[in-house]
Image 1 (spheres, helix red, strand yellow):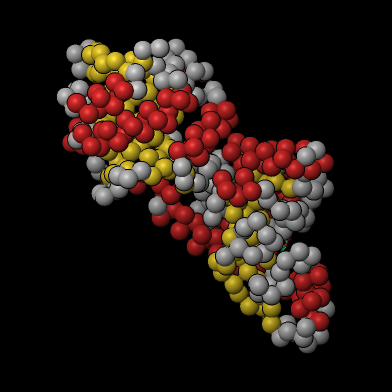
Image 2 (image 1 turned 120 degrees about the vertical axis):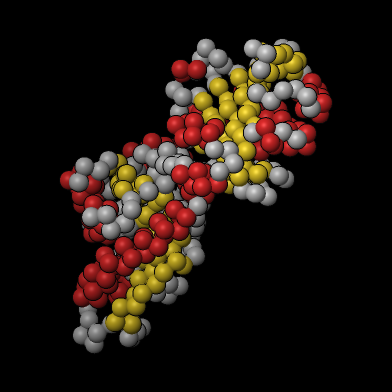
Length: 371
Ligand code: GRF
């Protein structure tokens, strides 16, 4: 899995992650290191280890919105699958948190909710722990939300406070423990994220289906294993940076637009259609865009459904989705399907949307839009 690590200073936690990836202790790769601080040693560690390093800050981007877009684009370009904040002192923008929902983690050197929040960083935390005469402190790894240190806790471990501790000695003991704790916890996080690889793809749910974006090269396999659940598990969706569940078709369209803008050279999108009741992939929806290598065939929407699922209700629902969502976005000129046009409902749905049926090759059917 591709992890982007964001860090503002020394990056010793980052180094622990890099080393664990190298030694295959965790099944992951640091695909990007982003820092708001051009002089941070974290960036140097990234360069020393051949990892793409990015200095992105309000100084370079000028506005908060521009910075957020730059970070998001960097995460997408490096195929980031989840984000780990290892001493990153800035808040992440809402679009990043939304795009990587439940996939942004932070490490904090105290037992949250104690000693967290604004101003609780660096030695401030350990000074506060000592001032309160705590006998133990610890480390928390939690999901990130829009506030400092308030997201749901994933793991915690305790570290003793010793009688003669200074803030510095306590900080050093906690940091040392962080280096192993971060890896123990990452192992768990990665295992969980890997359990259902489909979880990593953007999805859109309808009454009967889950429509899931599929990486282009994996889509070929999909065609040959519609109904084999084991084969589904083989799909590697590394290429998709975003993990989000669309709550509405508008959201999905927004995402696709963004995706096409970012990857305009491809302009080709493929979804798999997964039947909810059986969790089987039953078909694909492919869109051919206006630019790039598919530019000779723009505006084609291809719908392929395994013949066993060609019942009228399903097809109506699928065509409805295609027409209501994709037609407006893509100015779909042609909808093709291998299924013979025996189902009256599906013709009706297409007909109502202004598509006329044709037969191609005696086998494939296509419906072209009258405009
Ligand atoms: C760690 O103490 C971490 O818990 C906190 O920032 C510090 C980062 O240390 N969020 P380093 O830069 O990785 O050495």
